[in-house]
Length: 322
Ligand SMILES: Nc1ncnc2c1ncn2[C@@H]1O[C@H](COP(=O)(O)OP(=O)(O)OP(=O)(O)O)[C@@H](O)[C@H]1O
Ligand SMILES: [Mg+2]
Image (cartoon, rainbow, N blue to C red):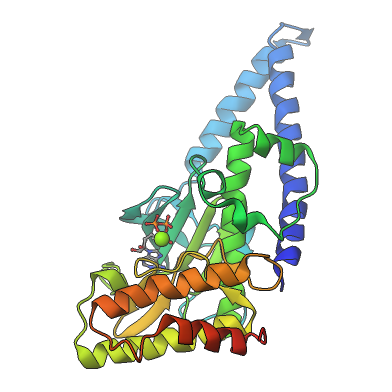
């Protein structure tokens, strides 16, 4: 799927959000209007509303599972690609429990979550995009070139950075990352399995051990000579898989690669760049390659192996762009 298609999907997702907001707005107005006591039978409209609200509150308390923080949100979310991995818990009666924070970031926070039912459980990484300070604002606007957006209320809300607009941006990044992960998973790239996306939250396969310790990022590892060469080969294979699909990471560095049991895993993909549709695609590819080659060179990879220009040329060739 090319990025254009992804953005068309955002737009249709926004249509829904718009309706929801409108409905919500209406409900609020109704409540305010009904604050004027209007007698109908023995209860005023205001009293009826108050009773309804108390009932709603009781229901929502009753709706929290005893042994968790919420019921599984699987049923209402965009779901990960099939075939589903064997560890995936799809039962709607499953319970989600938050076990702690993995990392807070500028644009998103990552939490450790356990989804469980009966005697089965799996650890997940919950990446929640924040509604402020998004890379769309402060990062290179080049990411948006080659992507289309319909002029609409949403576009204006985004441009004016209203709370609604900021939340839309956060959701847009979540949608983009989920789409990128889904696509990359399907073409066999080493990414965490994208379990689901709802609103601004992504649930991902947890990359780490069974005790909930996240795997180190490449930048935190000190591989010996053989390990370094092995990681380099994995990197070249991964970048080739991406190039074959006509894309580059867009923000690749030793911080957006994790190393789990010797296996390189690529993360943080909302800004994935289409090499053809984005007029600066080749520039982003070049930057990605140079960033990560810099790390390998600093760790002692011989320059004739880790030559960035040669790798860029290979990847452009793989992408059919030479
Ligand atoms: N699937 C995962 N399993 C385990 N840990 C993860 C997973 N995804 C992300 N993390 C951890 O959370 C950190 C932040 O994730 P990510 O890079 O996707 O978000 P970010 O908001 O862009 O953060 P940053 O600004 O630090 O790059 C990662 O460096 C990693 O330590
Ligand atoms: Mg990151």
